[in-house]
Amino acid sequence: MPDRATSGFDSGPGNLLMDAWITKHQSKPYDRDGAWAASGKIIPALLQQLLTESFFAAAPPKSTGRDLFNLAWLEKHLTGHEAPADVQATLLALTGDSIVAAVQRFCIGAEEIYLCGGGAHNSALVSHLQRALPRYRIQKTEVLGIAADWMEAIAFAGWHSRPCTCAPPTCLPSPGQNIPVC
Image 1 (spheres, rainbow, N blue to C red):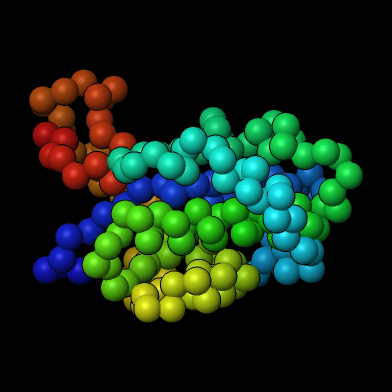
Image 2 (tube, rainbow, N blue to C red):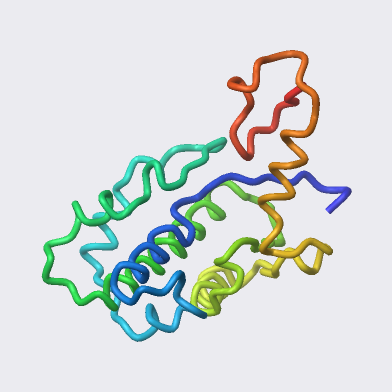
């Protein structure tokens, strides 16, 4: 909102792991509405083990992606005896819980949460967030006039289109860093 500070940073894997897992087991690019995750049961011990990743404890600014959260990372935590749907349910809980923890730890005083990217379309994930964060108004970025599927691309395009005279591009801050770039 124009009269309030805004912030953004990666809280965890987003849909990366869920998408990779469903692609591996069902040859689908994503879990529509989190339906496959909803058909499984969360594996509490696995969820706790995944949440020990140091990225989750790090303070913003921080950013991540497939460099950290990928199938190799996930599979080193698996025994090989888990039902694939249960792993998917656990991955949805991992994404949801990492967002919840980040909001509670780093977004003190926030009243609104705007969702973008594929997760904004995952009704099971959105329901998870609404149950865990009932005092927040949780909406897609469409209410701001920005399509949820385009938000990240728009942000990076705007960020990178600005001429930078004070530092080489390799010195650009990560998402969420509240310092001027140029």
